[in-house]
Image (cartoon, rainbow, N blue to C red; front, side, top):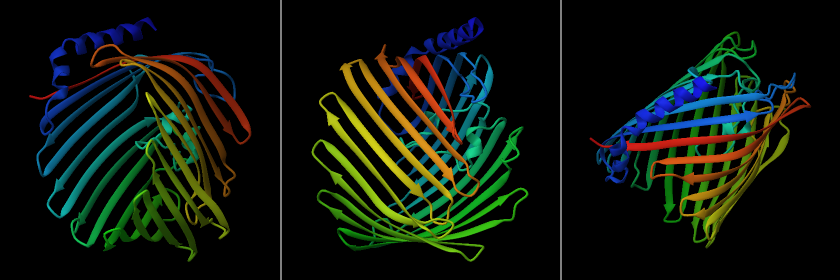
Length: 411
C-alpha cells in the first residue's frame, strides 16, 4: 500500500504544477481545449471479489486518469477521449479510447465514431459498475461477463447521417460494427462481431404530432456458432402535450428461423412544477411467443437544496429469452455551498429462460463530498455490494475515499 500511496502522490504533485490550467475552465466554448482528470480511490472491503467460494478481504487502490482534446467550430466538432485505470499500483485493468467527429449543416447532421475498450473481467463487479451515461443500470449482453476472468477487448466503428432536420419529412441512416475478443476468459465467452444497419423516416404530421418508422438489421457472427440475422421494424407516434409527451410504439422482430415476435408500448411523460414523471407500459413476446408484461416508471423531485430520484423497470426484447429487472433510487442533499450528502441504491437482475442463468447484483452507498478547491474534490463513504448467482449469495461491506481533480486548458 505504501508503494501505491507514493505512486499516487507523484501524480498529485505533477497535476499540482499546472494551477493555471484550472483557471481556464471558465473560458468561452469553441476553439481548441484540453482536459485532464485524476481520480484516486482507496477502499477496504470484507470481500473484494464478491466470491461465492470464499471471502477475499483486503484493500485496493485504484487510479483513474483521463485525457481529452476537443476542437470545435460552428459546424464541426472533433473530440478525442482517453482513459485508463490502474489498480493496486501500476496494474492496468481498464482502458478506453474514443474518437468522434460531427458535421452539422442547416438541415443535416453527420456523425462518425470509433471506440476501443479493454476491460479486466477478473473482478466480480458491483451494480454501480454497469450504470450507463443516462444513469440506468444496463447489464452486459452475456451474463458470463459478470462472473468471468480474463480480458475483453471491444472495438466499435459507427457512422450515422440525418437529413431533413428542419423539414416536415426527415430521414436517417446508421451503420455500426463491433468486434469483440476475449483473452483467458471462460469458454462461454466467445469472440465475434456484430453489425447493425438501420434506416428511419420521420414525418411531422402537425406541430404537435410526429410519426417515426425505423428498420434495423442485425448480423451476429460468433466463433463456433451459426450466423444470426434479425430484422426489427419499429413504428410510433409522438404527441407533444403541455404537460409532457405521449409516445406510442409497436415493433416486430423476424429471425433466421422464420419466427416473428411482436412488442408494443405506451410512454407518458409528465413535466410538473418541481418534479418529473415518466411511465412506460407495454407487452412483448418472448422466444416461445408468450406475451410478457414490460414497463418502467421513473420519478424525480427537486428539494430546496437537493433532489430525490426513483426508477423501477422490467424489460424484455421481442423474441429474446432475457428478462431484465432494475431498481434505482438516489437522494442528494447540499449541506453547504461546498459539501453534499449522497445516498445511492442500484439493483439489477437478469434471467435467461434458455440456459437457466439467473444473476442479481446490487449496491447501496452513502457518501459525503467536499469541494476543496475549484478543481479538487474529495468523497468519503461506505458501500455494500450484493450478488446472487443461481441462488448462491455473497456480500461485501466496505469503506472508501475518493480524491479527484479535473482541469481544462485552452491554448
